Length: 175
Image (cartoon, rainbow, N blue to C red; front, top):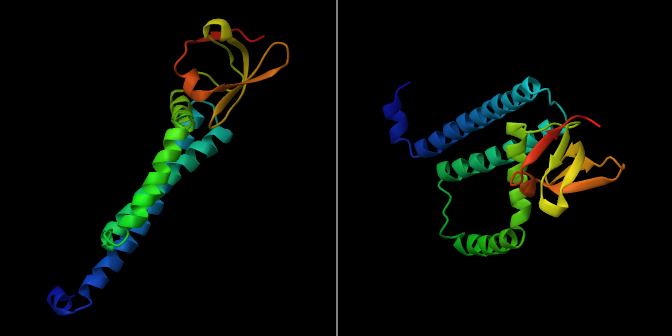
């Protein structure tokens, strides 16, 4: 194909943007598939295929989608000057929300750390050492925000993920 003819075409810029967009969409789906397979292989290696795997795949896909949308905005030269008031308002609201709920974000981040490090698994007998608030029992579930621990008495305790990664955790023999 003679590229010189296309460069003279006033629509060449649009053709280039469409081509890069198609490449980005293809790359997005390939990277999404590769990351999902990596997470699943990691889970299989640690014998932990369960809802935690689905949660972490969703979290990874969300982050990947944000990157993809940012790249599309760059390719299509979205003018942020016209959107500056919108973005300033949005970032102000999001900033206040994040400040007010920083523990929610830290729990999700701690969940990702727990998922990839596997310090304990569902069914593990653990003791989270927290002074007078020490919790000891079997890990019943690990969600985005909490570790659910079943006490020997049968009660269910939820312990925030962000606190769990900050405290010493002792592995116990199963009850």
